[in-house]
Structure formats: structure tokens, C-alpha cells
Length: 486
Image 1: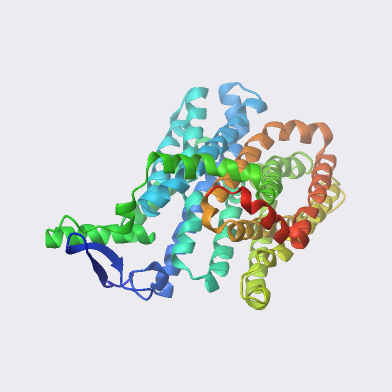
Image 2: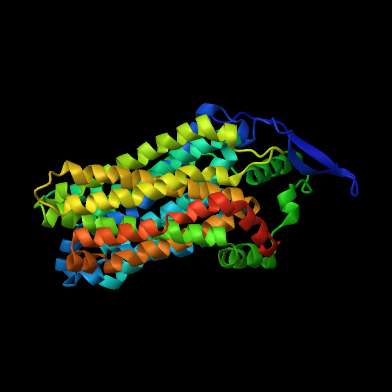
């Protein structure tokens, strides 16, 4: 059952003496997404999480067919990995594009158009017979495929009140963050079939992406309140014949200067003037790059070193996925048992730093899990469950770093959260694109143990970042707030 039909207030424009301004009928208007039924909001959140899953699986599934891809085109590993890198380079520009589009044209259509175009561009690697065609298709697949990732935070904020938003965000992000890890798992199962080749990695993404889009065209609602009001105003104009009916967003418009300031300049201004955003983005970007490096480390550790088949060598990544969902359960408990009771100052204001304790825990779990994995995966005399269980710590730790980092950024830069999250996503994509370029050489040159140990040491060196913000975050925010663009 969708959102109920609510009333629309039409205010009188005193200067021209006719009804002109269309508004919602107060904060309890049933047309507002915040007032939709619980079941309908769960449906909306689930769909946007699944669309995110499709887009993020596409980012990493290509890599599992790299060996047959290399044989068909007579290329080396350094060129084959560009299939993943180009996709993530597309992510960089997509993050900076679809956030602004969602604030002007709503959530539904930018998201669905993005997934549709991404699926269509995936036809280029699925059908292409030369390298430029395949790589160009991967780039545009990433550019448009990131649309749900760039928009899902806005959908959740549209639908869920603050008291419930933390739980909704925690569960949705668990799917978003585990998506790239599902890619190699599914790709390994596809490549394990003797009747399927590397192109079927793309065909699966195309079929699922276009199928999900067709369902969403008819069964997914718009959630952005200004766009819902504009739809109401259009309906009233047709019904009454009064062409002067409009909404506040119609009257305000969006000038080119405002677009340039808010969406082109502000993200880069923030990253260069806000220490909190810059350091958290660096931390999360490094961890994101490490995640993509693992997609080439695991098949070496379990395939080349332990002799597992291509179908099985990616399955240990399920340990990381399980850790992500364990971390999500921990965040839900934290929100219910701690955050709602201890997140406000004596004056009643929300304390953003109350988000940080789980992030600190995540920062400790990541290097612990990486050291555990490094020295058990590389030892054939140690049974395979040991390195697989290490993935639990890695997945849970990475998830805690990401979800609480996102929440902390939003809390610190509420009025400019889209700009802050856009540049954060773009920087993460840079690291995700670069790390696979040297992953194979590093793992084969140093070995699994030394490679993962080195990365674990770098992860440990970044642990003080959220600790410092726990102690001095409020002072840093006060000091840097004067540098924020109006």
C-alpha cells in the first residue's frame, strides 16, 4: 500500500490576489514521506539498497574473469585490471553529478536513469571485441552506476525521522558496503561454470539491472518533498486551469552561479578547509582501497597458495560480508542502548562526537583482522577457517569505520552534507581505482603475509584519527566553521 493521498495547502499571493503557492498541509500531511506507513518506508529503503547492491557488485565482478579476458585479448594483468579501475574512475565523476541532480530533479528518476544507462553501457564490455570499447563501456558503466550510491542517503533522510534514521542507515549501508565483496563471490561462481565465459559477468549485471529498473518504474515512489510538491502543483494546474500555481522551489529556481558555487566549488572548498572531513576522507579512502586490493589478495592466498578452484577461491570473502552484518547489528544495538541516551549536551544540542566510539572500535578491529589474516592465510599448515574468520574482524571493522564516519560527517556538516559526502565518495573512488593497479605486483612480489601486514601497519597508524576527534572534535569544528562557504 503506497502513501495515502494527503491535502495540499494553496496559499494566496497577496500581491496578485489569487492562489499561487502550493504547500504541504502541515508536518502531519500523509503525503510527506516521513508520514508514510512503516511497511511502505521499509519497501522504499529495501529497493534503494538493492539498487545500490547492483551498482556496487558491477564494480568488482569484472575482475574475476581477468585470466580468460587476458587470454582473449593477449594482454597482461596490468591492462586487464583497467576494467575495474575505469569503472571506479567513472564513480569519481558520478558522485559529483548525481547528488546535485537528486536535489533538483528528485530521487527516483536520476537513480533509475543512472542504473538503466549503466546497464546499457555494460553491453559494450559484454559484446565488445576490442579493448577501447570494453574499457569505455566500463567507465560509463561506473559513471552512471554510482547513481543509487550517491542518492541513497537522501532517500533515507526523506523517509525516516531522526529517531529511526540511524537503524535504517545502518542496515542499508551494510548492503551498500558489502556489494563490492559480493561481486567476486558471484563472479567466481560464474567463472566456475565450463559453459560460461568472462562476458557473463556483465550479462548478469545487465539482466538484473534492467529488470530491477522496470519494476521500479511502476512500483517505486518519488521521496523528495520539493518534487512531490511540484507534482501536486502540476496536477492542480491541469485541474483548475490556473497557470500561476507554483511551489517555493519553482519560485526560487537554481541559477548557474548557485550550481557553480554549491556543487562545483563547495565540495573542494570543504575538503581543503575542514580538517575533520579531510582526515576522515583519507582514512575511509585508504580502507576502501584496501578492500579492493583484497579482491586480488584472496584468490592468491586461497587459489595459488592453497590450490583451490576458481569457484572456491573467492568464497572466503563471505567472511568479510558476514563481518559487515555483525557490525550492522552492533550499530543497531549501539543506537538503541547508548546513542539515544548519551548524545546530547546539557543544553539539549546533539553532540556529533557521540558517533565516534564505534568508529574507534572499528579502527582497532581492521589492523587486528589484517594481521590475523596475513599470518594464517600464508601458512598452508594452518587450516583455512583461521584466515576466513579473520575476515569477520576486517569486515566488521571496515563497516564501523564507514557507517560512523558517514554519520559523523553528516552531523558536522548538516547544511552541506551532500557536498561533503560527494567529495568523500569521489576520493574513495580514487583510492579504489588506484589500489588494484599495483595489487597483483605487490602481492606476488612481497607475498600475501608481507603485503597484508604492511597495509595492517598503515591501518594501525590511522587509528588515532577518530580518537583525536573524540577529544578535540568540538574545538576543531568551532575553529574551522568560519572557513565554510556560506
